[in-house]
Length: 124
Image 1 (tube, one colour):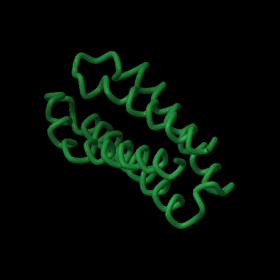
Image 2 (tube, rainbow, N blue to C red):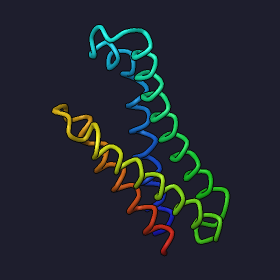
Image 3 (cartoon, one colour):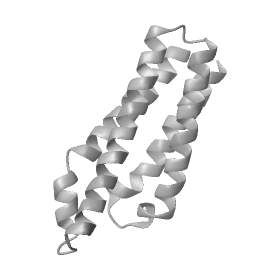
């Protein structure tokens, strides 16, 4: 059960991270004429959030497959990843989560779901 919970969280986190990287250019363009510095900041944020999510997903997968799913290392990794996802969820709720576009509003629920799965994996 631990492995399944961790891998579901890993796949969902990695997939959502990938969905951040793919549309980065079009997201930045959607802001219109905002200046080069602002474009770079938005580009940086989208890329970093995507890379962070992919890293969390790949780290979770690696720890799950390379070690015993019930090991202390796995539990600590799952809990640390869950903590990061909770922080990202809170930031999303307070910022883009209030945006009209549905994709922005999905971040917090997805991050929270993955965090819950990882806490459950650490607890089993």
